[in-house]
Length: 158
Image (cartoon, rainbow, N blue to C red):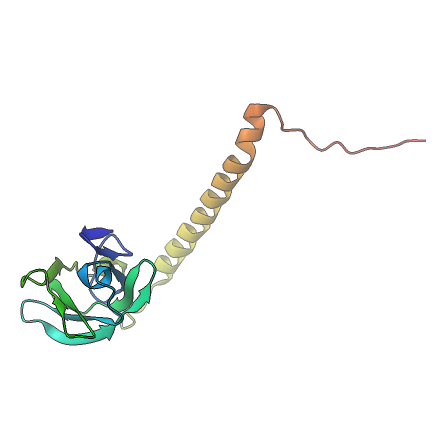
């Protein structure tokens, strides 16, 4: 996902407490800097400030970051000569989404037998659906084209 020119993330959404890979092909990359680091924090007050040295690749500078908690992800870049790319003094600021709580299973709450059975049923149905899709993808084109032939067993009676 490209959120702004020259900055790319490997995900569609930036979610709190998740890992994200960021790629930077901005001015510092174009000026052939050798070492670039990302300086970042979270929320309006830039909480939990951190600096990570990015890896230089043919596709730009890249780093994997664990997003913290806050309503925004704020960052800028600097190179080995202490030259900054901070979006013309504005910094790069992107909204963070909250982790969906309905997908969390809390260890404090005992899981009931009913919920375990529902999860098992859902798992079995998902396996059946995946198998059906696999068979459709594999055999449907053969049936349509006429290349589908049943295996004939040879029974030689003497």
